[in-house]
Structure formats: C-alpha cells, structure tokens
Length: 128
Image (spheres, rainbow, N blue to C red):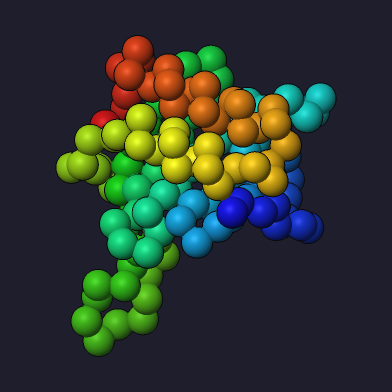
C-alpha cells in the first residue's frame, strides 16, 4: 500500500515535492505554489526490473529504466540513473496495480496518476 513520506526535503527553486512509497512503487508528485500537481514520476517494479514513468504538464511523458548503480564490481554503489528502457510500458497492468495500492493516497493524486497513465498511449513518449 502506498503511503506518504512526511517531511520530504524540499529543494529551493524547484516545485514542492510529495513522496509516496510502497514495496512495489515510489511516487514523487511535484506541485505549484497553489499545491496543484504539475508533474509526477512513478517508479515501479522496484524489487526486480525498476522502471519509471514521468509526466510533466501539459503533456510530456517518458518511460525509462532505472540503473540502480549496483552492477559495478569492486566499486562503491553508484547513484541510480534513468536510462533508455527496452521494455514497453504496459499501462493497463500498471493502472490496475496502482489502483490497488493507492487507496491511502489523496483521491486527486490517485486519479491524476491513473488518468495520465491512461493518456500515455495517446502521446509520443520521450525515451519510451
């Protein structure tokens, strides 16, 4: 079940961020000064093959894989990076799983993510 992380560090000059996480998902939602969401990044399949869907208003989408920085032998773990994903986004399965895990989220945020995942196929994704 997705739960909000309280007291998220805010970066000066960047939109206000809210952070939610579960064992399968991590969701960061960026909001303007009126607390209206202007974008989000939904990372999913954390334990196995983590990928991330990003949406920024008005209609910019990307679907990327997450390189967790752990595959470097005899070196310290690197910073996770977004890289091109070779796996297509299955929006139907992702919407269903997100819906099942988002009962504790504010309804407007849950509806935004589910709605934007549904619109994903109608836009030319960046990095998809």
